[in-house]
Amino acid sequence: MDVTGKSIFVAGANRGIGQALVTEALKRGAKRVDAAVRRDLQHSDPRVAAINMDVTNAAQIQQGAAKIGALDVLINSAGIALYDDLCNSDAIQQQFAVDLFGPLNVTRAFLPQLKQSKGAIVNNVSLGALAAIPIIPGYSLSKAAALNLTQSLRALLAHDGVSVHAVIIGPTDTDMNRGLNIPKASTETTAQGIFDGVEKDEEDIFPDPASASIADAWRHGAVKAMEKQFAGFVPASLTKVA
Image (cartoon, rainbow, N blue to C red; front, top):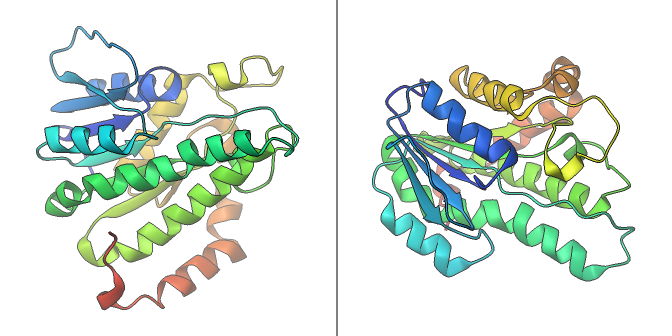
């Protein structure tokens, strides 16, 4: 997947990694970048079009999908992390609404275009999907579910020629974790690593120094082997995602 000349959709482009992904796509020669935002977006590059979309709003998702013609790459980058101790059910539900059902519903809405182009779905998850971060347990739960969603979509859409990528993101300098005194990658570095992984057709992308340190162990580990084994259970007749 060479991004040059391609049409890219970035959900969660208001700020942080999503915003950096818009910039990186333009640098790599994307033909069009649709940026899903929850507030007004003014961009100097005419290739960028703002789409008003909250990923928890079904009507806005459908309206956004209806505005988009051809699409090559869908990037689900919207996310929320709330500090909690698992005592607040509303907080947990809010994170699942954004981090799990957001990517699921956005993906389903854009599948016709992606099947037509034999494009790519990119779901931004987290190291917290592999091991819980106890200070943000609801986030860890939702991202673990999002990783499982990504693996399921990968198997279900394989016969349609749609590639599905999980981005395992380590600490990045965003508003979400700006208060943590730990080494962090810049949003630009993480965005570059994401597109590098897409262009290399990596199923699981480790785009920053922290996540890259476990890449080989993950790719050659028992969990990845089980994913490939379980994917073989899916017959062609069950590959419809609706």
